[in-house]
Image (cartoon, rainbow, N blue to C red; front, side):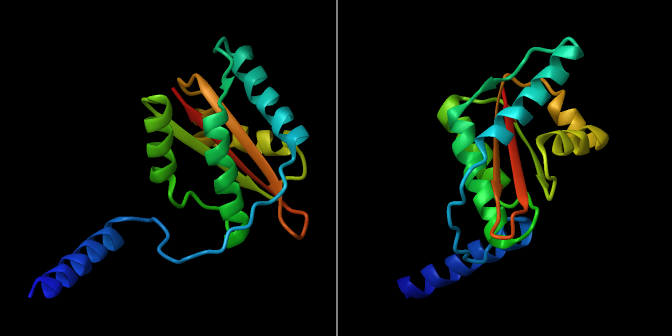
Amino acid sequence: MLRRQYIIISILILSLTGSCSKESAEPLVVVRALSSPEVEQELLGLVNAHRMSLGYTSLEFSPVAYEYASAHTDYMIASGTLNHDNFSTRASGISEEVNAESVAENIARDYDTAQQAFNGWLESSGHRTTMEGDFTHTAVSVKKDASGNYYYTQLFFR
């Protein structure tokens, strides 16, 4: 009887989380891709220069956010899609590790340069709002897939 209750509770939990969440349920083999540190640094510099030109503070690099951004970039490469899958898990992890009050994310794919990715974000009102948001820390991960296409994840928090 106890096992049957456990199975029913497990099914209920799975059906509730599956119906209310956009989180990915499919197992995915994620291989760690090589980072492109020059592109990462350039993009971080472009975002900070933009913020400073508007009178905002520059964002401090966060190693914690970088680990989460890097893992998500690997995940997007493995899935072959641009997505915010599992964002709530990243946000919760960052919040727990550094006591962040707010976490946001910009992603991109297929831009050949940091400048192109920045311009794409600048032209999108949602991405622009995130770049110009009330954040104190950031990290950006840029990696190439096997075909040489760039994937970008930038996390912001305060």
